[in-house]
Image 1 (tube, one colour):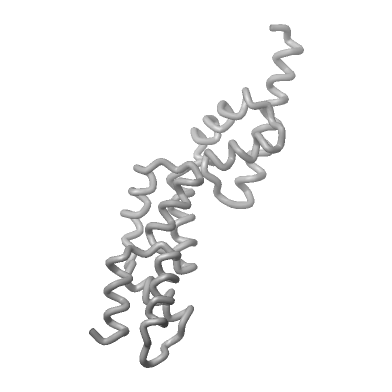
Image 2 (image 1 turned 120 degrees about the horizontal axis):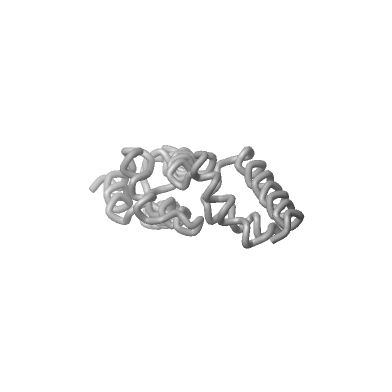
Length: 159
């Protein structure tokens, strides 16, 4: 390879890295998300993985950090573990990384479920079966386990 060709590769890699760093400056990304966005920006596909490897070595890119921050943000918005896990999987985060993030957070899923339900439905006395079904559907869509939903519905129904 000629010197000029080598300089072009280095310039291209620097451009890919700059694009990646700019994306990471806005928010954390998973490796999968960052790769997809860089490909969408028509960055040279042969350079992307090398640049992402370098960013991981520099600790600028971390699926572990992304998973932790993403999970905290989604928990604050009232989402449960099933939904958070599915969303992280869609973003290319590996199962062991997701499991470690869930374990590190030690969330009170039952408390989060109660908060999410209270934000959505308020503290209204007496529920009929239609209200309970609506609560259940909402909490299920939010990604809470059926066992927690059932316990919550039994508690507010008074069983």
